[in-house]
Amino acid sequence: MVLFSYNIKQMMHLSIMLAEPVDQTRSALEALSLSQKTINSLDVEGMMSTSVKASEAMDSLSDNKELVNTFEVPLSGLCFCRK
Image 1 (tube, one colour):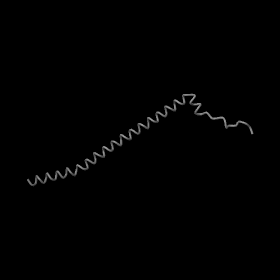
Image 2 (cartoon, helix red, strand yellow; image 1 turned 180 degrees about the vertical axis):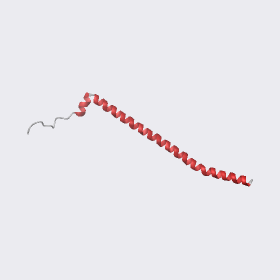
Image 3 (cartoon, rainbow, N blue to C red; image 1 turned 60 degrees about the vertical axis):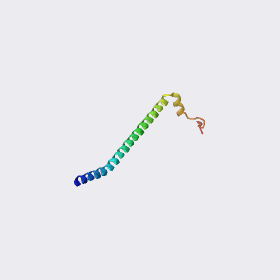
Image 4 (cartoon, rainbow, N blue to C red; image 1 turned 135 degrees about the vertical axis):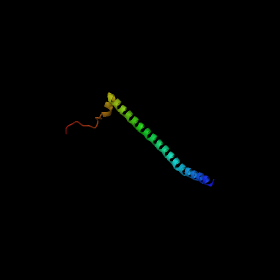
């Protein structure tokens, strides 16, 4: 009976010793998963932003008025006279 009790105590001690690293590992995996989701979200937002900017640029290039306004140079300050 004493041997049985000793073995039970050893098994309980061992399970307590293993529980903490298992919990730490589980917490680390959850943190890693959350980090991965955050990174994926940021990559998607960045790609969407770039796609929207590219679309806006293409739209402005196809609009002649916008193109003229973008590249129009004010002529008041330029002098085409000979010296």
